[in-house]
Image (cartoon, rainbow, N blue to C red; front, side, top):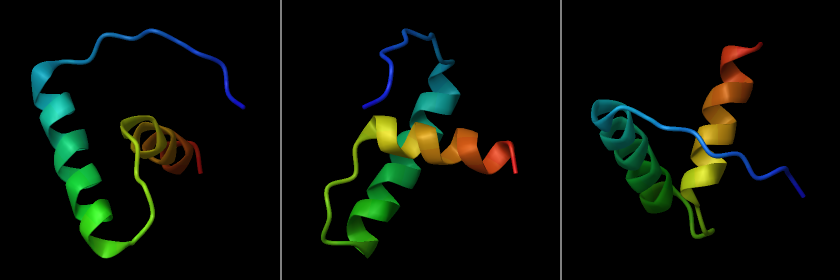
Length: 47
C-alpha cells in the first residue's frame, strides 16, 4: 500500500493523464485507476 499524497496538477496534465488512462482501460480488462497511471508515469521517468 502506498502513501497518500496530495498534489496539484495543471489542467493540461490532468487531461493527458485521463487520455492515457482511457487508452489503458481500452487495452486491458483490468481496472486502471488515475493513481496507477500517475505511479506508472513517475516510475518510468526515474528509469
